[in-house]
Every structure is written in C-alpha cells, then in structure tokens.
Image: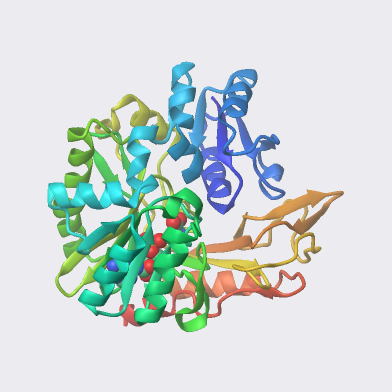
Length: 426
Ligand code: AMP
Ligand code: GLY
C-alpha cells in the first residue's frame, strides 16, 4: 500500500514510523511533513488545511489510504472530500469531528446522554457571562472557547478579575476569532489527568495504552499551557478499575451517542479524562491522535497499524486482535526557548545523525527543517526524544540521556517529565 499522512509534527512522525513496520506498506508520503519526517517519508509542500490540494496530491500519488492526523483538516471536512473521490481514509468525517470542533456540541452531547463531565453553561453574550460568574462566585472558574484554538482556548481563572477579563477577551475581542464567539463556563474539577486514545469504527471501541501529558511549559506544572511538553505511558492512575468504569460510563456511551446523533465516529477518539474523587469525568474529546501522546502510545503497539486503520474504515475492527508491549515509554519534548509565546526559528541543531536520530531512543521531529545534511529548528516544539524500557524509570533514563546529547541555542525542556507518574507508582 501507498499511504499519505497529512500533518507535519511529532504525532505524524510517530504514525509514519509505526506504519513503516507494516509489511503491507510499500511507500509512505507526508504533507507537509518536516525535516525529520523527510528522512523516512517523501514529503510534499501542501498545507494540512488545503483540502483541494490534498485531494489532488492523493490522486496524483494514487495513494491507497490517507491518514488525516491534525484537528483542523478533520473539522474542515478533509475526510469527506477524500471519501467523495473514493479514497480510503483514517479519521472522522466533518460531522463526527464536531466532537472536538465545538466544545458546546460535545458538552451538550454529554449532558443529553448522561456521560460524566463538569457542569457547565454556554454564553454568547459577555454581560450574561459576567453576571453568571458574579452570581456563582466560585473560583477557580474554567472558561473555554467553543471552537479550535491551538490548545490555548482554556483559561483557568483564579479570581473574578481574571475570569471577567477572559470573557471579554474571548467574546468581545474575539481572541480566537469565531472560535471564541461562544464560550463554555464550567465547574472546576480536581484529580489526576489521564489521556486515553482509542480506535473506533463506530461499533467497537478499543482503548490504546493510557498516557499522561505534561501541558505546562515549566517544571512542577508552572508557566503557560502548551501543546504538551512530554508524555509517559502507561498512566499509573488508569487502573483496571478506572478502565472498566470508563468503558461502561464514557467510551461506549460516547460512541453510541454519536451514532444516535447520526455522526458515527470512525478514527482515533481521544478521551481527556480527570479522575476526580467522584469518579472519571471527561475534560475534553479530541477527534484525533494526541500530540505528544501518540509518541509514547504507538511505540508500544505490537500489531499492524495499517491493518487497524483499514479495519476502522471498513467497520471490521471487532475482527482484529490488538496487542500491546508490556513496556513503558517516555517522550521529552525539546522546545525553542520562548515557546509557547515567541521564539526564533532556523537555529542549527547538533548531536543527531543524518537521519535526525540518536542511539538508544527515537527522535520524533515536530518542528525541524533539513538542509544540506543539517537539521535546523523550525517551530515551537522542535523534537520529542522518546525511549521505551521495561519500566518507566528505565525509559526516562534513556530518554533524558539522549536529550543531553542534542543541542540548539536556548533549547528548553522540562526536567520533571514522569515525576508524578513515578510518585503514583510508589
Ligand atoms: P483542554 O484543552 O480542554 O484539555 O484543557 C486544558 C487543561 O485545562 C486540561 O488539561 C486541564 O488541566 C484543565 N481543565 C480543563 N477543564 C477543566 C475543568 N473543568 N476543571 C479543572 N481543570 C480543567
Ligand atoms: N496533547 C494534547 C492534545 O493533543 O490535544
């Protein structure tokens, strides 16, 4: 098979490397890809959101399958456009991608079908939202933009001033454009967070190995929210008991609810969960593989990813036996100094071989460029240095060991990835 992967980050690099293990895969393409990905797959300069351009590219390459990895093309309906041309895809159609594309839609879905999540109200008018905040007078308050906002659309306001500011910024100043014309104000929950990605064909749902993201920029969960500074898998808070509860109360009900709404979800459905004292709650759904969760989950997959993607498309997922390695995996993101705000690009990187790799680990490239045999930074999150091991301490040791060997000016990474997970294991 010839497979085209849409996107150009660490997640896409991880999908490509797992597909490359399949005997059925003859050729891998990526658009737009990045420097590191270009060493393993042929890259094409088509933007991930360019639906017409991507359909043309898939036809030109006679791709047998297109994997649409990022949220924005999914929400824009790239899968619908490819399917209309008879091209096999992995990823939900536009109607199903609304589960991530609109927080209002996903909250209403959960309310209607009794899926546990934080209590909430929806607002389009800032005065009404402010009045509600004042009446509730409960902080922290959680304020979320309805639509996609590059992972930055959630504000945890510690007091009234911050909350009122967030409301004005989102609704009146359209901080995230039309994505913040509507907002959700929800109850603040506490407890450890767990990411569970799952494969689903709309009938069967198969959770992958659980993982834990580290969203804040600095150690001890300080600093701004980022796309994710590192991940570990499995997540020790996702016990067998929690897994059972999630399957019964969250995973299956969500898949059934989407069917009942005429929005059958086929692809990777991501459950962002919080394990509260009252049980597991959905914090968010994503309609795609998480980044950098994928970088620690897919290396542990011990089955053919191409077979799984095909079964999801054909609605035959129940026929497939999906196996996982009994190991742990850790990914340390090396970011440009200044991320997630402003940062330079084009800095020369040192310490990696000609494939962008270092011994003992796998380096998933997120924002790099490859020119004349050298790698240069080309984004906020630059690489995700990933190692697996028999247990989490050995995976972390290998990953951090390799991070020490790679350098670029002002590189920033967290030194405490996996610390919480290790504490929970004790
Ligand atoms: P999201 O982009 O929806 O995943 O939200 C980003 C982060 O905000 C989550 O990973 C949580 O840490 C936090 N968060 C979101 N919703 C809530 C909530 N209702 N209560 C507490 N924290 C939340
Ligand atoms: N790492 C969280 C996400 O992909 O949304």
